[in-house]
Length: 83
Image (tube, rainbow, N blue to C red; front, side):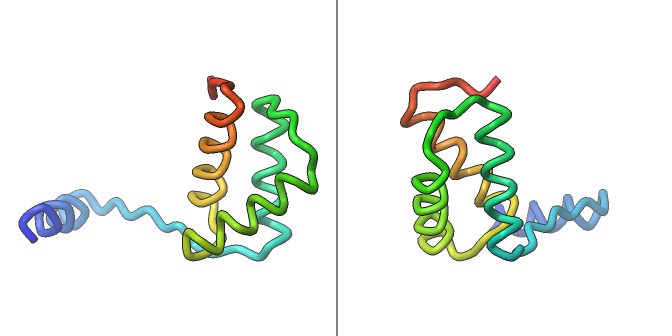
């Protein structure tokens, strides 16, 4: 409870809010495919899409944050660092 109050206090003091808004599936796939291309994660597109759908369902939605978390997990499973 105290930690939450501290965070709210900081956000009120500095006015910084980060929103992770839901997006449609095509936008979600575009984010993931863009990250995968950028970081050279060579996985078939059909596999990435299937895994990404499952990831978003188990994480409660599709957003930029969820897409990034999926890419981090994928890179870890592939043993590729994200530089």
